Image (cartoon, rainbow, N blue to C red; front, side, top):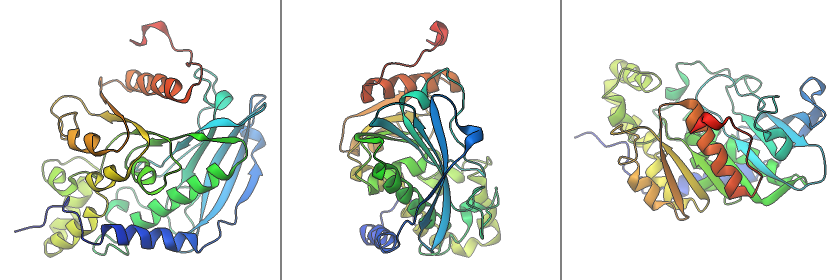
Length: 304
């Protein structure tokens, strides 16, 4: 019988503690340089370089509002794809006027692609036959390093630090207690192999492609994925949380994610997707504004 990909490994805690210990032994050695082209009269943009495990140099986009802080912070965790970027220059939702923002480019993404340039599709299965060689172990470490840097900035209010993103946002909030608020959209790492078997859509189809060529490695793949399953990270999260579920009876819908949401240690709200990127984004925007005590963004009245 095949091992389910959400069976918690006995050494789950030790695996992640070893990752964090490796990270702690490496100085971050930050280099911060202004990006004049991306700076405005209301915020200054910077490029940041940091050292993560490997050792590996990673890049991030930092924006600091004009005026007196400290400010609440939004930490944007990498989604599955080749590019991460600074939050938009536009003033429609006022993010860069009201928040310190930081977007990390994890290893393999552009600006953090030397010496490792990830393929998409392809990254999801890179080293997946070995939990200690899996590329996502380094990516999670990159995300934790970025958070350490962000909360070290004197412009940041450490009582109002939001992690925003998909799977890496949950993992970072679980491993790094400095996250006070979390907006989490599940995408990949929840019952991953079982969901992959029921789809031909990428990125999960990458797992099917991999196992068609290497069917004998299914148990090894399941073992590796088990270290990343949301059900194991959720009980470690103490941040006030908004879980952005998919709509209806989806495998990532409210009913499917009920156990994950219920195991988070802090109060958790679940928003069922309205199948509109704009409406879902507006909902999370207003939720964050309320939770962080920041005046609400100006949104068109028809968003509801």
